[in-house]
Image (cartoon, rainbow, N blue to C red; front, top):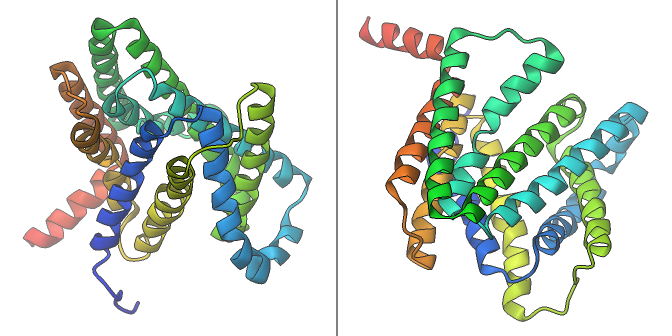
Length: 300
């Protein structure tokens, strides 16, 4: 394998900062959650369209009826993930919301056990208990602050479950398509679902001021396209575990940015609970067998 042009850890750091900005842009926007989600996905689709049309549109022939059905379900789950997560930011803090959404690996673990009968390891069970304890600590602290903060936490957890559903339904289709084609299909479905959601809920497509349109565009470019593209590029040079652990720092980056921009102060229960959740998920995503093997070789 040829050497990368730049150190792959640099794009990973930029990727973490990029996805950390997602919650910040949403908090800065004044539009309703469905509208923010709609324009985020619409602009993402429009930006990707030229390269998809020129190079990848022929891959659509590979999709069968089952693939279209699963892609529709995945896109629907993704749409409501954004709606509920963005809505949660109106009630709870950026730190609480983002750290609860990062519990996705645990939901994925439950999903693969229920639907694909994957075996449960003792390490996974312990990691899950640790992360759940951390999330309960966060929610307990938020409930002491206000009932609405707890409601925001619940929305974030449901949003986390929905993004897991999106990944589980999409994984089989993704195996046969390029990243561009798969993303284009699911993002398009999600955009259409969000379009009808906005109409049904009576929300407004506009007009909005220049700052609002800029925030919609930045949400599409930075967290959606730049952040995840950098992770996908880096995975060629580093292990999946490194990417998984790096993504766990999104709540840290988001919380620091929220402190600087919105002066969102963190209470002790949020700090301790957030740390425990990150530790729990780290225990879950790290391949300890590989770590032990690496240490043995290093020591030898």
